[in-house]
Image (cartoon, rainbow, N blue to C red; front, side, top):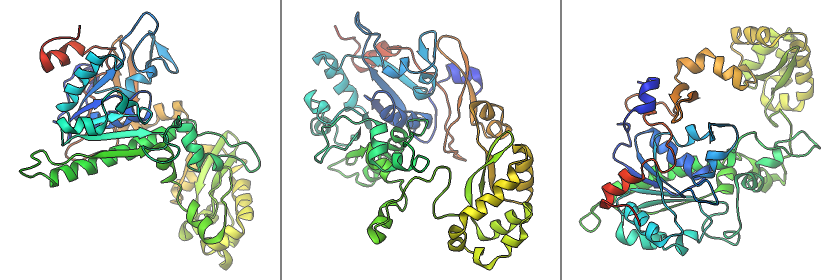
Length: 409
């Protein structure tokens, strides 16, 4: 059951499938916090450590100030930090690091995305932390991983997208590569990190013994570029087997036909007619039964060889029509197709609403805001938005009082 706006604004911690899991988040910006957000959506208790405000800086995760702001805080923040509690501590201060160390001793999972070596310099490396908490699982997200010749290089998601092979493909042939319009490298790394945490939890559960009453923890080492590379499908084996270097192909999907974006009078429509039976139905819809009956086009290899001809036929049919009319015809024929959605399209789409993929929350400053729902959907133990994104240091007193009854001097 999804929460009402009131419940989402003021509710208690979720009783989801990860209820009872204690997570300390030391990450900033995107990759680490997205991983922790995903855990929090399903009931994990996430304590986010943020730098306090000072005379020189506003403090907090820099994401608080990114993109469009309301009352000085990013609306992106309301998504990335929902279901978390904020504790303001300066990790450069030894006394504050000691408090963080105590919090980690009680935690199941630690999430961090600093440059390799930073945690060790603070005395918060895995060897030191696991001495006091052998069951600790530590997710470490960095540009290039904790080992290897590039480990000390600064790494952001956009650089990882380039090194992982994605950026080269996101372009029209002969034109400058473009970026995906969101921080996809960071998000892919975060999701790989969550997968790693869940597998490490399973191993910890299986390794419980008299010598390890909580089971054995471990490090989950996620490199941004590797998360991107892991999603590059046949890129490397095609080069290994044939010396083929895959090149950018714009909106088409090379080697699979037809699958492309086609023009309409009021926009573009994506059509994926690359299944053998789907292709025949598509050709019938566009009035090209001759192509549908062509034996050379019955399988994907033959269609790939004549993809320009096929794309031209589809484009000639879509071009004089409106997107909605094209989609009506293709949906009636069970041909996969869709419009290219904008934010407005998403907000107004009934399917998004029906599946609770758009939820309403109230922020700390009183803004009523639509935010993305929770993925994946679990039938018995669904996630929920139960806590709004916190103000900086909103939970410092409560968390530290529970820890030792005092605040740092």
